[in-house]
Image (cartoon, rainbow, N blue to C red; front, side, top):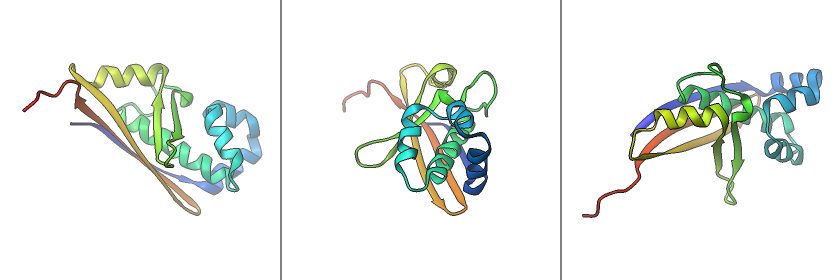
Length: 137
């Protein structure tokens, strides 16, 4: 069953301007070290971070809270599988919120997809609940 859906659109140029203006203060307030390392390796650091910004916004919407109720930017972290597929890990309050909205006997799966077409970066997040123990038959 679907527990939540969120989407967000971020302007890459605006993220680039924020990086120019606030630099590491912005980077370390919003992004995890894994996200920063990946972005630093990319030719388009601002585009990479804009997609992750959008993913965090989309995830907070899928959690049904937006960025309030104690959620922190770093409670949501985007990384990638070996295949390149983006994945979202939750910690802190975001993880607690996910657990509270997941029905008993189910486990949550977070699906995330990212795209960009300058100057836009977009993310979609779907939170799904699966039965933990499916009956045979």
